[in-house]
Image 1 (cartoon, protein in one colour):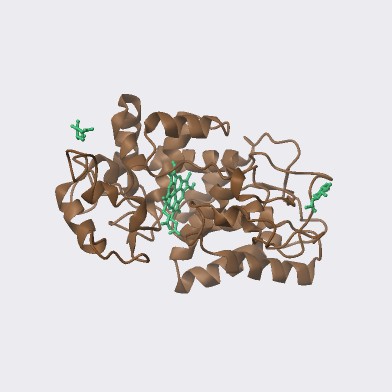
Image 2: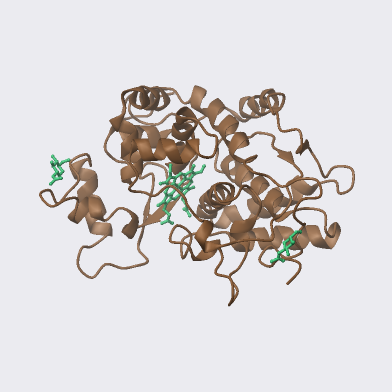
Length: 335
Ligand code: HEM
Ligand SMILES: *[C@@H]1O[C@H](CO)[C@@H](O)[C@H](O)[C@H]1NC(C)=O
Ligand SMILES: *[C@@H]1O[C@H](CO)[C@@H](O)[C@H](O)[C@H]1NC(C)=O
């Protein structure tokens, strides 16, 4: 199954049936007592199919938006839990999470959530939260980009608060210890942090998040020596030092930007990871071993990724009578 370039190229994932079998095996390991399997099934059958159809239709013409939805779910869950707060628009009195540097101008896919929400409100008014829709959409995106599928619990409710000042996400300049601490603060282990970082096998980035590695690394060294020089030269053509295009984007995974495969881990080993935070996985002895294992054989990572995603998707959820079911994902109900 190895690619033509030898053992350091990424391996394609296993066939569909196996990817789904993994999903069923994982279901029994879920522990959150508030969320439920197929929460909506009795009152509104087909919720997950509705979301999947919307996401699938959009990804056919724009697969990059799958990466946008996966990142959006991460940014939702890490800020006050998976409560749909990342979807709320700013108002004159309340700059929302969308204004934060980590979100503004780069989070994408909001219209997909709006479309799914509109279809579900028409069919089952007031039943399906924006937080659940986003969790389903992120899960489906991975699968539609040839990654694993897994079951997630549902019944999340939406918050009525979204404040820019609450956003405290890990940054692309973080070192290994900062990354570990940031994930630990959300109840995720170092191993789960490494596992979830594999999400950077899809999607894109603005030059501004890594351009310091090309031209202004530190006072004595212009170019980050941990970058593969050939890759760095390529990045310099895409992100110019003088007169940079503020909208220029670079794929996170130059090998296969729209395939959810293990090539991220190959990139980290080869000095072709885009962010300092990605390259940081190659600065810790135990992490290097994990990255090497994931780069050579994707199978264990393909099982661990869904497990870590399930855990992330249950961070700080609102359930029962908490919060609300927003009518419009961009606006709290009471306003
Ligand atoms: C470990 C700490 C992390 C840092 C520092 C980080 C940072 C970033 C940055 C700076 C971007 C570029 C955004 C842009 O310019 O559009 C990005 C993109 C992305 N991130 Fe992360 N990220 C981290 C973890 C994660 C996790 C845990 C996930 C999901 C499980 C994730 C999924 C993505 C995806 C899919 C993209 C591409 C988005 C797109 O194409 O629109 N990241 N990340
Ligand atoms: C949010 O909901 C809580 C409790 O349901 C309520 O007390 C509060 O006033 C609401 N906040 C806004 C901004 O509507
Ligand atoms: C700059 O980075 C290089 C390579 O990592 C390192 O050897 C050097 O000590 C750094 N210089 C300063 C001033 O931090």
